[in-house]
Image (cartoon, rainbow, N blue to C red):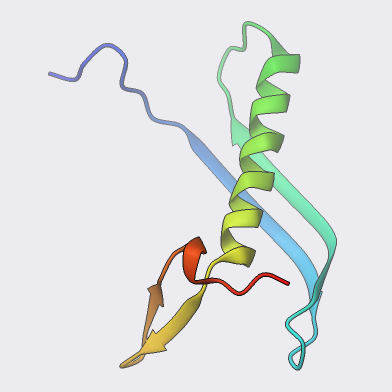
Length: 84
């Protein structure tokens, strides 16, 4: 039996961006997020949480130090990233 606080949600996001392969700089041109919130008690709060989660995930994906080892992606964490 599942605990009463556990729930499942469904979401998808797509991003269109330009990436400079030499410098690693990128420009986010467009993003689309779809989220199934079910019956919302406060839509303004839900929209803020969804947008905040998207921006947090975008930051996580673009500031970490990822490398390839034996053909597999290895995430070494944000402490290993070189920030200038």
